[in-house]
Length: 290
Ligand code: ASP
Image 1 (cartoon, rainbow, N blue to C red):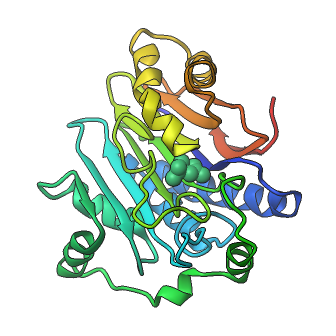
Image 2 (cartoon, protein in one colour; image 1 turned 45 degrees about the horizontal axis):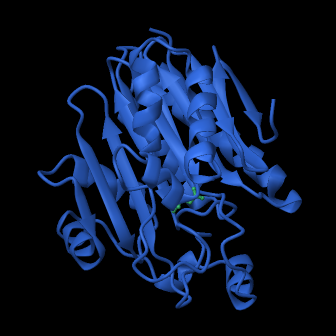
């Protein structure tokens, strides 16, 4: 099997000033994930490493650089899933962690599926993860945005990755600071299996970004999976699901999709969606439509 990876840096109204950073960040994350896959690493390693890089890159709404909630605090959600045994791990409303994706992966490897807030923190600490200062996650851009109370319109810099390793095994991961100025305790689609993500070695995998409430209401990731299970091309599956999201609930979002044969797809009805994927050893990064 030829290794394949597709990553995204969010679907939304990505500002012109951030376009270059988005493209570069996605490209570097896809490159690093692909390098691991070519070395024979499992899909989980490629996904975790790619997302850690995106979390460290403050251009994205994940890890450092996350949106602030109404109280001026960073609260993050993340999820991990692997396609052989359908193991899922997710966390919601976690603070003071540089890499929520690594915490989600630890949850996936435990008996739990979803841990929130204080309990997720206790689990992380008992598994040796270290906390970072809450202030370290906040970058000046987001502090200023919070001060302007820039509500809702900025959805768009969640990160996600789907990888297929040489054994034909798939994994998916997502990480987000959620929506700007969100209500404390608000949780979107990202840690919810079947909404923001799904993966199954028998069909393919998908990661979403965009308006979490809308994505949840149509169980968007499962809609895509139903198409993949019928052998529909990932591009067609992604476009169809975004159409359905808009028709049924007026939602705006984007999807990256990778099927078990290594075919990729991406669709969005937001202004932009940053993403990168490989064609053989070459990485392609885009942010506009087409
Ligand atoms: N889907 C994320 C959420 O609603 C936000 C995003 O993708 O930008 O939390």
